[in-house]
Structures are given as C-alpha cells and as structure tokens.
Length: 249
Image 1 (spheres, helix red, strand yellow):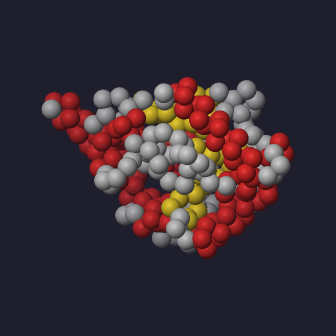
Image 2: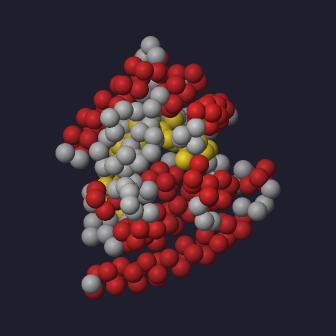
C-alpha cells in the first residue's frame, strides 16, 4: 500500500514538467504542417524521454551490434507492450508506423501525427497497401522507419508469424532491416492484452516493482542476402525466436 502511494506521489512530482511539456507540444500541433516537419519530430523524441521519466521507467539500450548502425534503416521490433510507442522513438531517430486508432488518442494522437507517424488500418487491405507505399516513400526520402512485424501487440511471446511489409520495403528500397529485441523484466506488468486499456497500462507502469526495460539492438540485415520477402521474413522471425529463448524463456 505504502509503495503504491509513494509511486503515485512520485508520478505527480516528476510529471509536472511532463504535463507542461505535453501542453506545449499539443499547442504546437496547430502550426502549419510544413513548418512542423522542420523541428517537431526531434521535439517529439525529447517528449518521449520526458514521458519515460514521468513513468519512472529505467530504459536501457544494449548495443549487441558488431558494426556501426547504418545511417538509414527500417527498424523492426517485437511488440508486447504499449511502452514501445515511446521507448523506440526515444532511443532511435525514426518515424513510426502505427495502427490508425492511435490517430484518435486524446492529445497524443494529434502529437503523433505532427511527429510524422504513418498510420495503417490493419483490417483494411487498401489501407495496408497505402501504408506500404507511404513506407517506401518515407525511406526513399532518406528517413528511418520503425514498425512491428507481428502486426500489433500479440503478447509477451513472439507471434507465430511476421508480416511481410517491412521486409518487402527493404527489398524494394535496398534499405537494411535493423532488428531490436525488446525485453521487459516485469513481463506480465508490461504486456498489453485485453481487457486492459491504455490507461490501465499507464497505471500498471507507475506501480511497477521492477521498472527495468532492456532494448537490444543487433547488426543490420541487408536485403541482398535474400531471394524474396518470404525468405527474408522467415529468417528474421527465426532470429527473434532464438532471442526469445535467450531473454524470455
């Protein structure tokens, strides 16, 4: 009980700067988009760090890569939690691909739009095609993109398959895949599954007994090694199953 009270007080005190920052960020979204594009994505990364500090989460990046991360990449990661929506852009200079519902989230939805987030309606084939085209256009413009090939939050264990989108875009553009494995030490507390809402998960985060989060980045994988998107996708999926054995099992 006392721990929960302390956690709540800590959240309020540490969250004052976050609340002010959020209001400023939201007001800025009403500026013309052509102006926002020049500075808002970088500011959004700083806002993500402010959010992480307010939640009291200890986010660590582990550089398992043997060679330097390429200048441009398509980042892929497993997707067990809602936290990576701020964890990934805090650590990496990326434009995220998110489900269309994020666009309607209170305040944050408009901020994510201003930050250049790409959206997809997962149940719509036409929307998936449009998202794939937007993904290609974004990497063609020299930007980095982050997405989750499981196709949504599928639980703390790697889903039975990965979707082809990221790997198809990598083959068509020649831009390598940057694999990042997400490990939450308090797996159950971070996992986002029904019936919990986003507000439920935020409350779970500030009550954590173990607030350690580990993101492991590995060497980029180049598309020239593979004949097609299917073999590329299967290779990376197998890699994640091995990482799951190492970090989760």
